[in-house]
Length: 228
Image 1 (cartoon, rainbow, N blue to C red):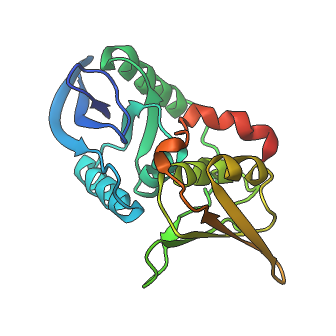
Image 2 (cartoon, rainbow, N blue to C red):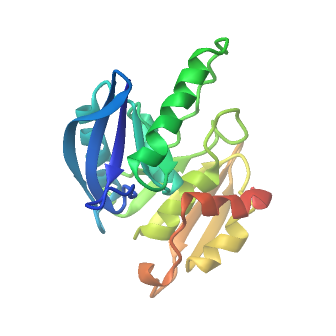
């Protein structure tokens, strides 16, 4: 069995946003052995396309290792890694503290009766061609579906951590948490009712500064559950 972990120089799990060294461990006769390593550097203030490209490169390097343990991070990283076939496990501490726990979870799952697979609707935020800073995301096929990532998991990290001119959101209904969160992030929105969906255009307020807005941890998303 192969498991990967993103670690800093002290051997502690770090987030993809922080960057570090990816260690691939293999269970050899009951002992976890590092079989290869590579660097995964933070994109800093890079674009969403740069992030996806960096994640794609790492997932290609991971090859048949489809599990990556890393520090607790936001939902966008989880969705991005999942789109390339890699499961991102939120952990804390050193590999000695979590590798066996993850491996045992997979071994236990393998002994359970196989359940029908639930297709996870994909949600991607895409920059519009020839319109720098303008993005679009379509939530209509995912909202309320079993196995879907919630709108909060996907949009909160983007809204909190990225400069953009406009984000166009296509949805069946306007998420209730917009009313509370958008002002906190110095954002405003305009709604347009179409024939069978709602289009919400989100814009940054003048003078909006990323450094003045909170950065959401993946666990922090639970505080908005009641507003979904």
